[in-house]
Length: 192
Image 1 (spheres, rainbow, N blue to C red):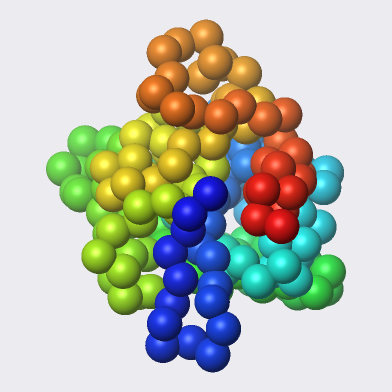
Image 2 (image 1 turned 180 degrees about the horizontal axis):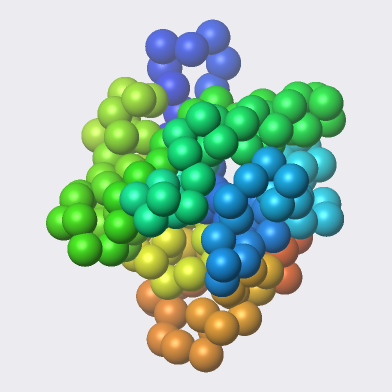
């Protein structure tokens, strides 16, 4: 599998983009509104750390309309992301970039998935023209659609809303896995 490298860095790095709720942490139809409600899916934190230890660069792109709905504030979101980062660091990994859309569905923004704004921000951050060959891992169709608009390769996990997403039509070429840990097993095996 081809993945972009970063020539300005000392060694080649492979990029991967994850959705947050339903991929890294448990999702809730009532929204994840606090640090206490931010609960990692078993194996997800360790999987991110394994990727990092194998030379991957990890970015997270997440819709967080709970901000626009007044269910939590920006500080609480920062605290949730701090918890996520801390847990990954404790396992020997790191998340290099977290981008989020704070808008509700009717806001008309370009960052809310399935639109590609968050992914364009990620590409720009890493000085890439697009995300061709970059694995995009999500539990919903909109996660996959957003990443694919910039050339990302779609991976669906069955956690979160993934099982429900499987009932619909998936983009061509979508690979389906039980959870983030199983996607990482696959990617690490492929990249040997």
